[in-house]
Length: 125
Image (cartoon, rainbow, N blue to C red):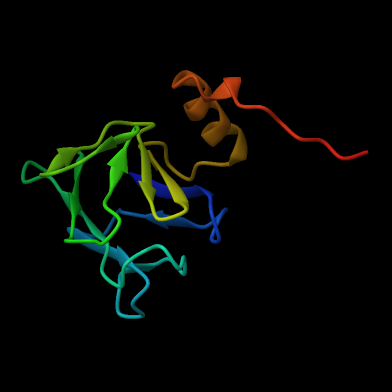
């Protein structure tokens, strides 16, 4: 089942399984289905909705102040999500994964497919 994985930002490492949800509200508000405490995320920032046929999900900007980007493109209307899509809201990056119970290795493989392996890494000695 599909999962949202926060890969960057104040809540990095958190995951949210979309399995039993037709509609997920994402934002800072404590009443959101998936709360993200990022100061640049609106109280009610975006929605992720299960498609009517039950296959896949759609991202929807919920009139947020800073917008929603999917793979670097600002979305203006309903945007179908594909495995590995990177969703940016505020200072937070969320990866949409169709893999059951993704782990760090799986997320790394998803990002690598999108060319993210080119990012620099800082290592401390």
